Length: 385
View 1 (spheres, rainbow, N blue to C red):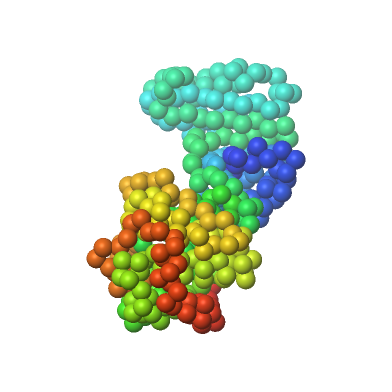
View 2: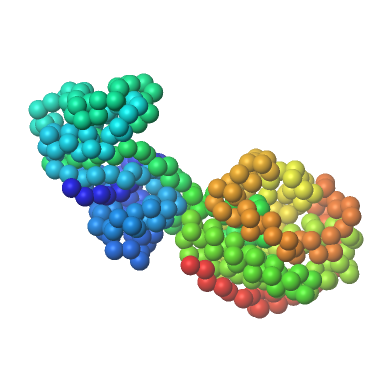
């Protein structure tokens, strides 16, 4: 008998003939997640599990595994040979000493000479004999012991299913580039699209000395946190100071955010295409700020020529976004008081319903193609993870 960690996936079951591709990618990601620990990831009769780990490393391995996209749940289980007496003794040993319980059995091995219900009753008898203060409750028990009898003569015994993040394996949907600021929203957007199987790189626009070097470090810290879910990434640091200064000097103040966003999107698309990314991700949420109205998004999006733009937060309210940020551990870093470039030269009354022709006319006062080329030539690349 030994302890193992059972792994289960969700959506991959729906993939039909392509399921093998997703399963192989998920297994590869699981193995990467537990690198550094002396353990083995195995597959047996449709069951994924991790074995061979030291007891003291159990929870550290679990913490890594629950962040692997594509995994739906896991359980810390005992693996033993299928022998009803041995299973009964184990369940009696690990059962609570008082309160209520139930046994739930799944029997894939039809050669075992009892039905699932009969096995549950037999094992329940072992538990009651050893723990006379226990009672059976089939509906709302204090503890439920699961028994999974497999076709290969092995069985698993465990208590709980621990929820993982679900979604699809990282890399199964291609690669994307996410606009990553120092705020609450964009790390959540990156996380949500990574959950859908995208390998995600990030692009950050930095305006030193108008913003401090701590603002840049804050973004890199956010990238490190979210990379625990998304995997290794590149962060492209774009020097945006001169572009903002030119917009401030040459364009109407109320148009500044819109024009700035349009230039960011142009730069993002070019870097994305150059580096094999098939989409752009933003943290926009409809009507949250002036640059996120329908009209502003339409005008901003008009500069994108080749790639789709994913906005996974578009229908979420701020509290929902904050809840997710807390869940993935980015919230406390996001609220550190280091402002990003979007706060530089911030107008008092930014336009909330811009018209495309007017914005395009205002942009003509800039040599934005030259500014974009210079920004791309001087990109700093930071490898995360």
